[in-house]
Length: 139
Image (cartoon, rainbow, N blue to C red):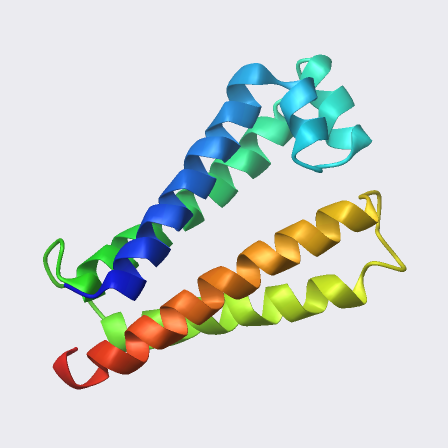
């Protein structure tokens, strides 16, 4: 079992659950996790937009978690695993770097949001990269 991919899958899964928490707990959670005041207000007004966006993000994170678990050997092999994991790894790493570039132009989010979310994405990207490197030959 690949510990890096197991950890990456677990952390992606936790991130997905936290996004579900935003849907359930509403505006305060959207604010706390840095989704922006507009998303928080829309959630408080009963708009479906924050829910749909957040469900989309949750779905992506769940799929990414499953692919990491598949490559780690926890669940069965999923299709296109090498390609998908390279894409997931790239997205996490690019998002991590890009977030630092957005600190001065936060687009409705705080500088702290961009710093913390970028660190989290970089960690997840590096875990995927290390795990993928170890498992490459067996995928």
